[in-house]
Amino acid sequence: MATTSDSSVSFEETDTRDDEMNSTIEEWIDDLVAGVDDAQASAEFQEWLDIQSRFHDYSYRNTLLIKQQDPEATRVAGYRTWQEEFDRHVQEGESAIWIWAPIIAKQCPECENSPSYHEQSDCDYDETPSEEWSKGLVGFKPTAVFDASQTEGEPLPELETDATGDGEGLVPVLTAAADDLGVSVEIVDAVEWDHGDAKGICKHQKPDNDRPVVEAKARENQADLAVTLVHEYAHALLHDDVDDDTERSKREVEAEAVGYIVGRYFDLDTSGSAFYLAAWQDDDSAVLQERLSRISSCAQDIIGVVTEG
Image 1 (cartoon, helix red, strand yellow):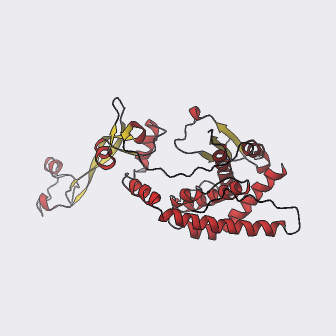
Image 2 (cartoon, rainbow, N blue to C red; image 1 turned 90 degrees about the vertical axis):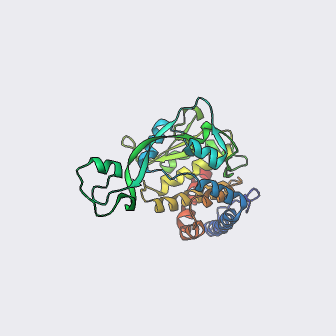
Image 3 (spheres, one colour; image 1 turned 180 degrees about the horizontal axis):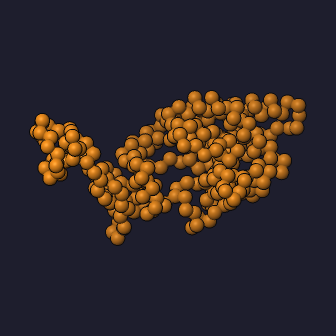
């Protein structure tokens, strides 16, 4: 993948400054597109993708149940699934996370009960024997699952998406720039962070606040914290709450691309953004080019406020 550790630039206050910045950002987006393509083709990403495909896609209701019982849960599977699919074992003494699992059985075409319940019901359907009935959903049962953090064994592959470099002085400058960007910001201590594996979040227009609120999880890697702040600032500046998954993915691409550009402008290595974007959807390259003007404008706004502050 393309790297960005030697990519710092500066733009003098000249009549051609905007043109120079636009041209440079276009080049950087081209680099990011190439990086995403390389990431998707890499063995590391394919291994990660294979593991991800083995995890069940839980319903909205079960996702809420999981988060209520374990807000920090990331990858969840049943006891035997951990053993048979991932060669990992639930650690002794761990408490199960309870969800509702569907019961699939042969189903009466008329009353939709399973054969045993059909026999006890008032339904008199007898056109076909029960062994010829199609299978369908007949109910739900409580089922125990466990989060990856409750297991041990073969390591699960992780994608290295963190930015690196010297971000020590950039974090306070970015937090100081929040007011000028129309954003409220808070860096939350890791022990108080209650948003799972998310590095940061953006809350849009809370009832008691007329501006978006950005929260970022504190960490030792100040370069990555800086890029997380920029990523969430981009959400604050560009996006309202979005329910549509496809559009949400595209906006996540926009925010990460802004983080990549601003981080690169300040001489951080943001090449890990390629893996982040590769994990979001298959057509990152097209989305990056399609939304270049929005990405470029937002990145320039943040760079302008930070450098002029």
